[in-house]
Length: 86
Image 1 (cartoon, rainbow, N blue to C red):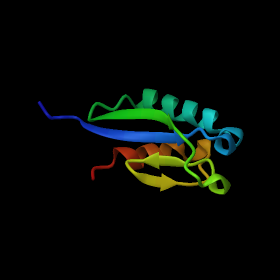
Image 2 (image 1 turned 60 degrees about the vertical axis):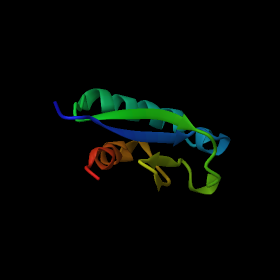
Image 3 (image 1 turned 90 degrees about the horizontal axis):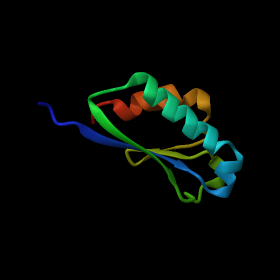
Image 4 (image 1 turned 135 degrees about the vertical axis):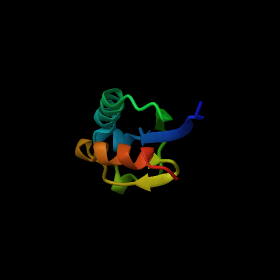
């Protein structure tokens, strides 16, 4: 049996990102992950404290890489990045 790798997606939930739509982006990530039902990785989706880059929000950190100005339209491509082998 192949060991599953653990990947992380963290969405900034600080005030600025929250106002710019972070909760909706979190929902979009959850819907995309549910739709894919990938069995090769364990993906931990969660919120994060302020990333101190408020002007660039919404901030998403995927496997320790930061993505800025994220919108719901970006979610499928960001999940692809998350699932990509390292």
